[in-house]
Image (cartoon, rainbow, N blue to C red; front, side):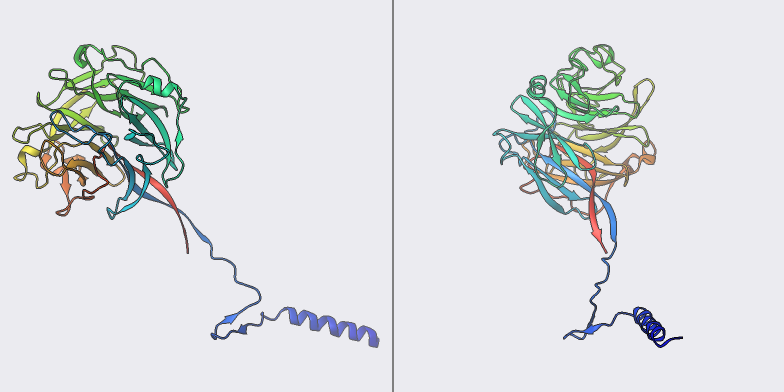
Length: 397
């Protein structure tokens, strides 16, 4: 091997051996090693969905004879509560501040998608819809204006998602339907003269639920004998009564409805101005036939008339309910006393055991602890709607 070739070979080998050595760490003043090549960033944990109870504290209905807060005395807020701790985690909308108009009050909430709620807003006798990000921020009008305010021109009350991805809205004695883009589908979807056992003067619809098969269930708060639960086919149409069931007392009216999809149960809250009589301030469970739409098998699962002997907690003038079927928890908004002029509202979280319905009804709903899940305050005057939803939170290791 020539001398030149030998030196070229020697230099190549030295370069190769140097490249195989680990990087040299320099010691800083704190004694910790550092490298000119910084370590790679730790991998991110996938977004973890966290459950929240979203609460609207606006103008509400708590039964005949009970005076509640109006659009100018209600808190008019939307806030979220941690479903595990019961702690409020932020106000996401304030309807006393811009962009709200004077007189706006949030009536009803639905979880629209992974990131947004829909809010049914009332102003006097008119209503409108807004898209509200779950984490707060800019609210946008949903649907076509002024068409929405035109069709909701008679006392809006509540809303629920339809089985086909649209939206059902109550106004006075009518139910309107919008598709997923906010376009009206009929005029109206259900009218106020359904006939048969549903009644001929359904002028005061109060709340709404949707069954697994798409049946629409609502309640009429007109005077007896028209205070009743009503079931109609999801397709709607005038005079399309599937079932009508009278309220459990002539002086009580349904204020909140939830449908237990797992067990096919309709859970209904009733309210009136006394606890001296049975079945007035109460919660009832019914069987629901998905084929015929028939409501049957009335079971009392709470009655304030039996407080505190049977039920150790008071529910009076219930204004809103929502069922979290993932945790079998029923959230109930209740006045904090049985005064007919309501002082304020609190939220109870009750463990819901459907297997006890018709077996041991007093054990269907159980309360843990001696205090409400979310106690009354400046933000709970009064609670018009609640919905449980998920909110993605990005975490890093």
